[in-house]
Amino acid sequence: MINKILTLALAVFVATTSAPSFADGLAKPWQLGMQDAASPSALRIHEFHDMLLWIIISVAIFVLLLLIWVVLRYNSKANPEPAQFSHNVLIEVLWTAIPIIILIVIAIPSFKVLYYNDHVENPDMTLKITGYQWYWAYEYPDHEGISFSSYMLADNEIDEAKGQKRLLSTDNPVVLPIDTNIQLLITAGPQDVIHSWAVPSFGVKLDAVPGRLNETWVRIEKPGTYYGQCSELCGKDHAFMPIEIHAVTKEEFEQWLVTAKEEFAALDSGDSLIRMAAFAQ
Image (cartoon, rainbow, N blue to C red; front, side):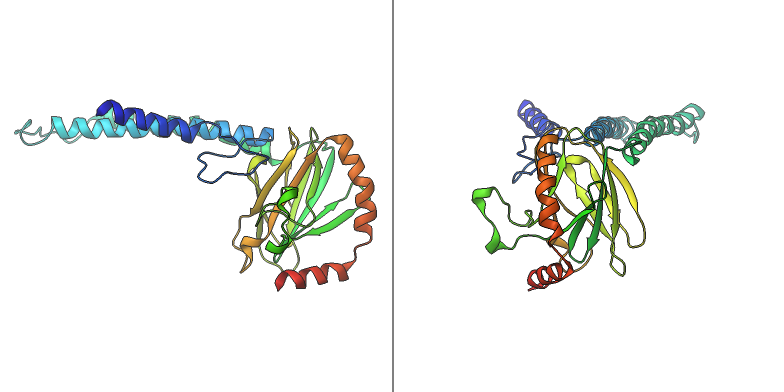
């Protein structure tokens, strides 16, 4: 019986800690664990998570064994005459020093990950992201200012033959090149609310605050379609402002730029307002 319990516990542990199988940055139903890392930032976050998991498990096991030992060793039957002392200098030093050491072990790699994910020197390109109620707007400042709004596709607009996903696919996906250091500038529209641009596969989750420009970066390592969502409660349609990113090769990105300059140059604010009204309905 004990062997079966240990086997089950080991299976659950492996399932929750091992890297799951994902198709293009999309989580599967009942999937355990985090999405596959598609960027160095996400990879470092996952490594830090795994290190913390081992520390937490070790502390939990130690405390459990200590409690069991105390219950068995110092109950009234096993120890009818309790000791009269109230202090133990060595133990008090240890239970103060050991947690401090553990915190230092956690803090150093934590600061490294935070610093690494903060920004990148001399990025290859920039993507500006603006959150609105309730959609995202994107601008490519390095590519003649290409800009467009990205709305979630309604249920009757989903084309499963094209691989579009309900509540995740958008009318204008973001297209980004792989193997490129991309600076992300994230903000929210004036007179708007706080949003949060989050793509789990990239290890990116940063607030979009009105009047403030937050910065991070990403380097996508493999082509595919990656999804994210607003992760800040921003109003009644908070759950309906997804993020869809198509990561392509640099050659394919250059080809997309040619068509994008023509397609999005034809859009004006009136088109955006029409689309916003249709989405609201």
